[in-house]
Image (cartoon, rainbow, N blue to C red):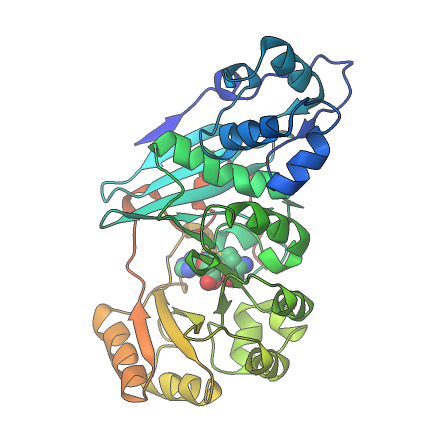
Length: 369
Ligand code: SAH
């Protein structure tokens, strides 16, 4: 069932029209909070209290920070805001998957998903409100570019889902597999990771990318690196460029050497995501070619039968189960760890970008070339 929630009753309190733009506190690490709050708070432990209220209790409003004096709460509210998004719609599937459409400060909308699995929760979050890369199998790409999210808007998705589902930070997995390309918004993603890793181990966080080379080089220099997943989707340049135009800018010929140089901590592996599209990249020869392409890399391969959607056209269909299984087995015979991503939340249009598309007038769709 879809619940369309009235944004007026759920959005943050609007500032007076002539008030200066208030600074969003979400997205600031403990250290950054201390610096920003210095002119307002009187004692250092107040920063700790505010940090806790923001990230452990997930408060929406300064008035809920009841361990602070009324006067301090008022001073905070004058200068700062807590950028938790409004839930524009919320969508719970029969398998427990819960999809959210969040409305941000400026009206932009992004999706995030909570995927429970045997008591463990994985949150799939967005890094951009839209995507410019136009991959042919992706609904978000179909709609086109949006803006970069701020670090606060990325962290806020996690907080908003936690609040809605009443979940602690401990034990969560986070994947940057929602809308957008995280490595085209490296600064905000890094800022968000700095906050998220205050309570969640970087080993429980995965950044998924098409392989933007400058972004990868930057990530390689980070001290606490999350896991890295690469969207591969085809075993050769020609086919990859066909479905992922970005391959013309960052081709496999440059991506694979960059991944071979990428510093992996002991015991960690890269993840390769490979969408299976019927009749396009799903033959046993393709599995062999994929296996050769990845030779020498410490990696696991996640096979994803493509999620069809009307806007993607008739040809974007998954192979049947037997073919998916055969592809997986061939990779395993070649020595790879290969898994098939189970489809979740099918009954609620769970594919990337589909939730946002739901509320739109189809006449607004951009024509497919
Ligand atoms: N831009 C990043 C992260 C967002 S997409 C990236 O490309 O990795 C997250 C994953 O969802 C990617 O592997 C993407 O290829 C996959 N995806 C997009 N559309 C899909 C669809 N229709 N069916 C199955 N997977 C899809």
